[in-house]
Structures are given as structure tokens and as C-alpha cells.
Length: 186
Image 1 (tube, helix red, strand yellow):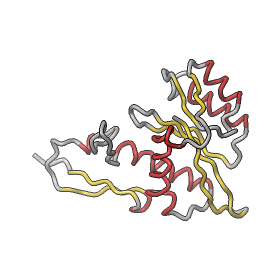
Image 2 (spheres, rainbow, N blue to C red):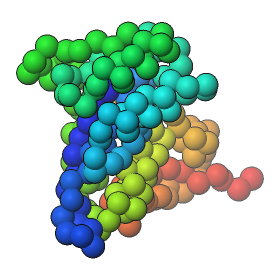
Image 3 (tube, rainbow, N blue to C red):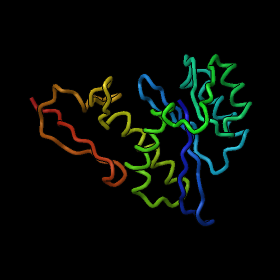
Image 4 (cartoon, one colour):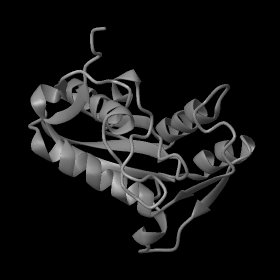
């Protein structure tokens, strides 16, 4: 699945709206950042498509890409996807439930992170999104009948064999927190 979300930020030129393009693997829930820009024109979208479908790209091996009818998903974007063996599927108008995993990720990113911050510039926006993606993949428990409140891609800190004291790791100044057990000294 793929979708956009927008984020208003403050810059030295005044308030600006940035567009965040992402792709989500519905089976694994892995989210890939397609890019962040204030102007998602046809050339930018084509480059984003080449980036995720090129050699060793994140969408290598994907069969389908579902997305809404946003005009930013241009004909050139679709052609690049098709040439990579990915069939783009445009959803019917006004049907966000058909791209529910993407919509849920948008809500999580906004509620857990972006709506809690005053972002001053593109660099801070990129950092916040990058930090949230690390948290989302490695530290945030995910619910759902097929995930069972587990971490998507846990690192060694999440090992159930650890028996040390519980400590907190935080991101973005304590906005995002993850608790784990320290390695116990033998």
C-alpha cells in the first residue's frame, strides 16, 4: 500500500506544508519512506518510484501497489511500477477502508509523533519521521490478530532471555519510549 500525509511546519520563509510519501508492506507492516517534499510533482514521484523499485529497492518482489486516486500518482509513476513488475491498483473514490493499513500508519505517525511536536524546518521533520520509523519497526508493540502485540523487527534488546533490570530508551526527547531488560551480569 502507499499513501501521502501532509505536515505543516515552520520555516524561515514562514509556514509550509510538506508531503510525506510512504509505502507499507501489508503482510509484514514494514514501512518505507518514499520521500518528503513541499512540491510532489511528476518528476519527484518518478524518482521516488525508481528509488523503491530499482536494484535492491524496497519494493523488489512486490506484485501489487494499492493507492488512492490522488493525482500525484501520475501515469509516469504507474509506468515505472509496471516496468518493475508491480501492478498499481487505484482504489475507488472515497474508500479509505480499502487502504486501511496505510491509513492506520498515517494516524499512528500523526498521533504518536508529529502532532506532539512543533517542527522548525525540513531537517527536523526528516529527523522526526526517521526516528518514528525506527521506533515503529523495532520498539513499538503492534496489535492485530496476526501480530499479537509483538514487535515487528525486534533487536537484541527485546530478547526474552534477558533478566536484568528494566530500563527505558527514549527517542525525540522522551516523546517515544521503549522499555526493555538490561543484559544481566553473570
